[in-house]
Amino acid sequence: MLSRDRLISLIDAYGGDLQRWPAAERELAEQCLDNYPELLAELKNAQALDSWLSDSQTPAFAGLEARLLAQPLPPRRPGILGWAGHWLMAVTSAGVAQWWRPAVLACIPLMLGLYVGMQLNLDSDANTWLTTDEELYWMALGELVEETP
Image (cartoon, rainbow, N blue to C red; front, side, top):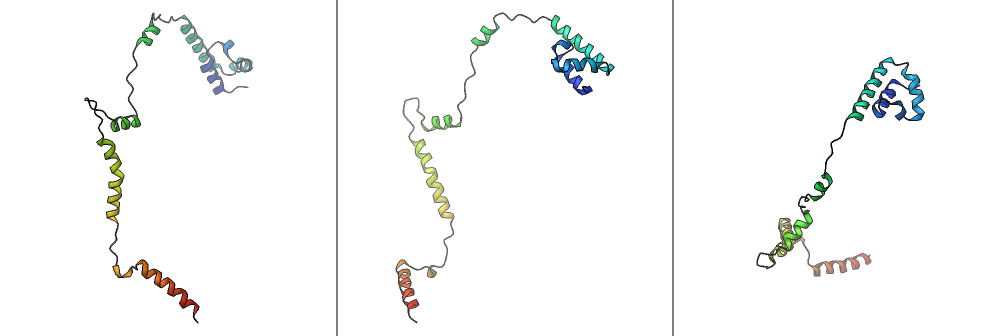
């Protein structure tokens, strides 16, 4: 037994001609349509739509394929990598490469490193820091002090 919703979905999907319906559900649908008389009106509407669609004529579009194929494609816009590459390796109208653009790009990490380095807080007390010689001296003394009782 098919439900009312399933019958409506079958009518919407396959139309009013029961011969187009799936064979497994066609026999059940014919039996169930007797149980749902309101769906007979839905089936009649689908049959009317099917007949209207089969009677309608599609206009002939002479040369449509040739016209479509003859149309030029819109120009392609380069992506971000293409744009960056063109900007870096730009050549002027006189044929001279603009060498300063890659140089400016290479200086950006240098400038960023200088900026970050200047922002570090290195204002600590200079007396607390030991020189390398003092550290080695205290390390050597530390071993001697630990061995004596």
